[in-house]
Structures are given as structure tokens and as C-alpha cells.
Image 1 (cartoon, helix red, strand yellow):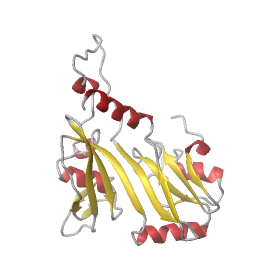
Image 2 (tube, rainbow, N blue to C red; image 1 turned 45 degrees about the vertical axis):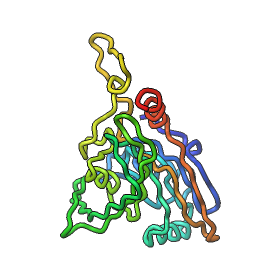
Image 3 (cartoon, one colour; image 1 turned 30 degrees about the vertical axis):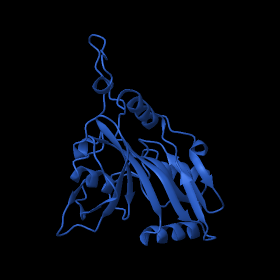
Length: 240
């Protein structure tokens, strides 16, 4: 994989924080059992010596990610995450025509330590997400997701419990989107194998609001990366 120029990812920077638009397929931190792959933390430390990643996004998830440039910034951001003071908004494309109007999903999540999670009312940790449908297509829905807590795979599994798995998320039974399924009359060349429009699950960290060390709000809007923008463009054109 060709790694991006870190400077090109920066959406915001001051003396204490950097917020980047994390590209898909780049891990936030060293993954368990570390393969030695480049990740956001390694790229950030090459840019700013004391950089620390303040929270995680799944490797396939793109979008706004906060990095502290010094220990004081890291403590300040960590405390906001711990106290659930960071306002996080994600966009997901889900399978089917689903109507969510301030739907609160409050289902406890148990991390089994094996890169997957389950809903477990007895032993799981509290997990809460608010969902709103933003745009309806014939076969899909663009959904706004606001996680109140920050559990692993929280948005992904909570959507799956509502029979609205994120497209391309095979771990939670989400099917990929193919152009042939939305474009009438689309034909493959003989012997060609069709590739999905997006080669990952369609989840993007779109907005983020947190407080800087001066206690003023830092509000970030992370544009869709190319693959996500292409999916939305094709759905607008052929599935509206």
C-alpha cells in the first residue's frame, strides 16, 4: 500500500492538536500482534515527535481523527472522551430502506478479544448510539450515527441489530454494492468479474466537536474520501 503524505491528511492544526481525515485501510495504532505496518501514530510521530492518537477508528473506517501534539493535549482530549463530551457524527450507507428518526439503540457490547464483539445483556458494557436516516435510495439508506459511548465496532453491530447492516461489512452480514444491482442494463464484459463499488464497509467519521486547551470548541467536518464519494454519486445517479 502507498502511504499518504501526512500533511495532506490534516484538516486542522494548532499548538496542541492535529485533526486528520484518516484514509481507509490505514490502522490508527499498532494492531494486536503488530505486523509492523505503517499506521497513523507512526506517520504522526514523524511529523510531530510527541504525537499521540487520542481515539481509534477501525482500519477500514475513514474520517476525522484527533491527534495530540503534547502530553497536556492528550490528557485534555482523553478526559473529554472518558466523560463523553466529544460530539461524534458518522455517516453509514446501509442495506435496505430503513426509517430511523432519533432511534436510540442501547444494547451492551461484549468484546471477546478476538477482533469481534457481541451483544451481551449480562456481561456487556453499556453502549448507546442514536440513528437518523439522512437520505433514502431505492435499495439503500444513508444514515447519520451518533455514538454516545465508544465501544469497539459499536455503530456496526448496533446497525446490524436493526437489520440495517452497513454495506460491505461482511463481519456483520452487510453485502457489498455492485453497479449491476443499481444500474439498469449494466452488462459485464464476457469473462470479467465484477468488483464492488467500495472495497470496504461504508462508514465515515463525518463531524467532530471537542474543546481545545483554551476551552473553545474545535469543530471539524471531514469530507468523504474518493471511494465513499463515488458510492454516493452512483447511488444518487442510479438508485435515487
